[in-house]
Amino acid sequence: MTTREASHAGAWYTDHGPTLKHQLNEWLSGVDGNIEGIGHLPQPGARVIIAPHAGYSYSGPAAAWAYKSLDLSKAERIFLLGPSHHHHLSTLALSKYIRYATPLGSLPLDLATISSLHSTGQFKEMTASVDAAEHSLEMHLPYIHHMLSSHFPASNLPPLVPVLVGNTSPSTEKAFGALLAPYLADPANIFVVSSDFCHWGSRFGYTYYLPSRTSSGADGISLGPRDKPSDPPIYESIARIDKLAMQGVESGSHEGFLTTLEETGNTVCGRHPIGVVMAAIEVLRGEGEEEEGKGRFRFVRYERSSEVVRGNHSSVSYASAFAVL
Image (tube, rainbow, N blue to C red; front, top):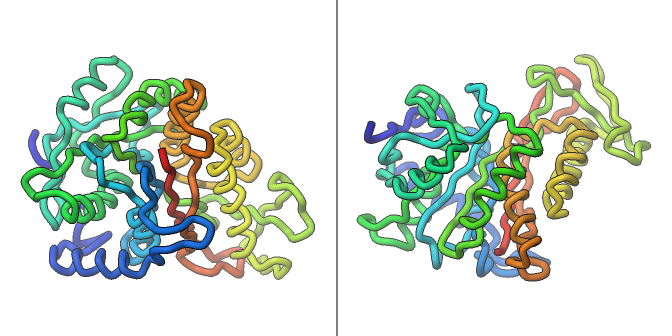
């Protein structure tokens, strides 16, 4: 196998290269380059980001905030971790392709690093059909290609290490975090974590609601299709649920993040790749590899696809964050 085609181009995002480049430039130029309490973007040493993976008409602008935060000055390879939406997987899997195509051009895969990871005996291999069906990795490829092209010659783009993350247990996330920690410690490596946040609505099997009177994320209720609460409106409850998850990520505690998700049931689809990277950062922190204050995610953008006011409505949330290592 050689090239994975851009199977979602023309549906989830445009397959016309010049139009796609224009869209990406517009979204990136719309990012506030100087954020209060954070400072100028990109932040030096910001080598890890969390960004959404929905269709670009929904999440493209939100993802720009993560990519504008990314420091590519020392980049030699890009690790891309995304959740498995369609294929049952309890571990992590690697691609068998040589390159990934985008409407902007192809991205080479880092075959040496992929081979080294395979040699541990811990990774599965994606089939061609699984690789083609999964959107959580592909939706980041145009942004990655676009960002790399602005820093490196087209003939020498840093290669990609795509990693599909299954429905992993906390112990599995810790084990793979330990395995990936040396790669994360290397300043030549960039980590892109693919995740949307709350998927709210009956079609997602999640209608959890936090009334204003509740003090804990575990004290919510499930709404019915005709429910239309106002204290607060549903969309404000969704924002509160997502804020609890984002605070869990920003805490730097892998276990704390998982506990928050358990309390609210928040349907963060990339919880497992986030968990793996948080576990890896914890390993570095335990080994003294990270300076005080580093390795903590900072969220720079939060959006929702719609403002839900009734129980039979739905929305998906998109959040962007970075961590300095």
